[in-house]
Structure formats: structure tokens, C-alpha cells
Length: 128
Image (cartoon, rainbow, N blue to C red; front, side, top):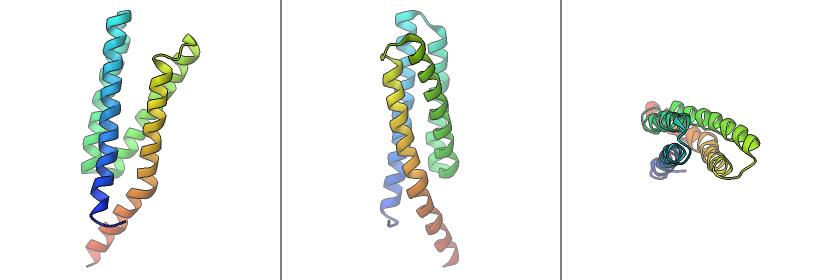
């Protein structure tokens, strides 16, 4: 994996985090409008802010940003699993759960494939 390809792959992870942030925020707004659920609005807003911060961190401090996003996404998965079991309705919890799982797969790939290459490149730059 070359030096030119690496920033693009990191950007894919950053954009994926931002997409999930928007989906969670929109879900919170829809939950508030349809069911007057202030909890959905607050949870969606807080989650979106945290994920946006993770996206920013993924550029500044990739290891910390991607790992934080992975953790927050895992917490969201737990919430959506509980809601799915409680309501026994696929929408919206099941769909959001699928989005979170896809996000975690992307983040897992970045953390296991892309970040190690970043470490190697940084190490070689400091040696030379």
C-alpha cells in the first residue's frame, strides 16, 4: 500500500463516520417528529456530535479517532439491539443496526489494514 493510496483510504473511513453521524441525527429528528421522543432527539444529537468529533480526530490522530468511532458505534449497536428486541419492529432500529454493523466493518478494516501501514510509513519517514 503506497503513500498516495493511504490518505484516500483514511478519507473513506472519515466519510463513513460522518455518514453514520448524519443518519443517527436524522433518525433522532424523525423519532422526535413522529413519536415526540425527546430521548431520540437528544441521543441522536449527542451521538452525531461524538461521531463528528471522531471523524475530525480520525484525520488528526487516526488511531484514536477510528478506535473511538468503533466504540461509539458499538454502543449504538447495543441500543438498537435492545430497541429491536423490545419493539419487534425492523424499522427503525433494525435498519440503524445494519448501518452500525457496516460502519464497524469499515472501521475494523481500517484499523487492521490501513493504520498498520500508516505506522510503518511514519516509522520509515523518521528513520530517513
